[in-house]
Every structure is written in C-alpha cells, then in structure tokens.
Image (cartoon, rainbow, N blue to C red; front, side):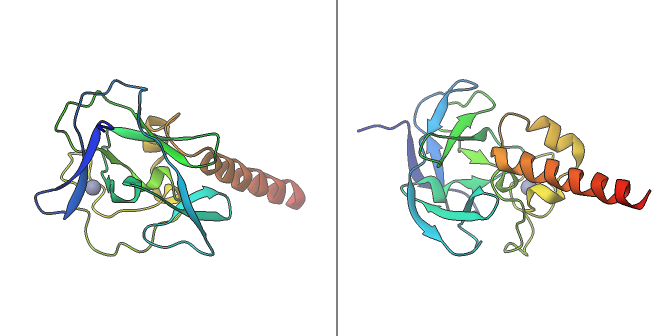
Length: 165
Ligand SMILES: [Zn+2]
C-alpha cells in the first residue's frame, strides 16, 4: 500500500522519509502512533506533554530535522504527533520538520545541523532556544504544550515580579 511516503537514502544525512505524491498545506502527511512511553528525553524521543516523552512507531522517528521544514506538528486524538504540511510538498521531496516543534529542549545533537536551508540555525536546538520570530512563523504547527510551557514561564515571571513590587 502506498501511504504517500517511503524511506530512502538522503545525500549526506543517512536515511530520510520522502513523499511519493504531492501534499497540500494543512494536509496530514503522516499519522503518528505512539509505540512506547519513555522515562526521559533522548535523541529519538518525542515530547507529547510538559513532562511526557514517547517513541513514535513506523517511519515517524526517521523524519529528519530541517531549520526550514515543510511539515509541522499537530497532536492527534491518541496524543501522538501527526505531520501536517506547512508548505506544498512535491512527490520525491524529503519530508522534514523542526525538532524544536516537538521538544522544549534538545541537547543530544552537538554536531552542526546539516539541513542546508537558508535559515539554518547552525545547530539543532529546542523550542526554548528559538528566536521569537521563528516561534511566530511556526504558530499552529507546533505541539501545544510548548506554547503552554512558554505561557507558564511568562506567568511565573510576572508573579515573581508582582511579588517583589
Ligand atoms: Zn539547519
């Protein structure tokens, strides 16, 4: 069966997932299924809640990072991450997302990012390290708890300020 994507070798980044047909903006490209729960964050972990990390099944963990990704994340009813087109995707194009769209902190990738995009940040970083403009660009395409963590941090900061004054 053709799901619309397949695993292939990339030039320089090992394996990647490639579209086998075109996808539109907002279209679900890959449906996420949670394989197992993890007790901590690691390089293939997906953060699905403020303190919850899982491993996705199927080809989802094979999707490479890009600093200018063609997919974003939407939480599905099972609590897993679906990949949704944030740009039109052509058949044969590699499917990518930004790891910062799913993890608040990313500290397992010390080496330089090799995504090759014009907007490459140089290193794969987490949501907490993204510039405000990038966060705004990704609005609607990131896991919702990342926004909640930001809001909470902001609230805590204001509460501390109020307490002092
Ligand atoms: Zn990059």
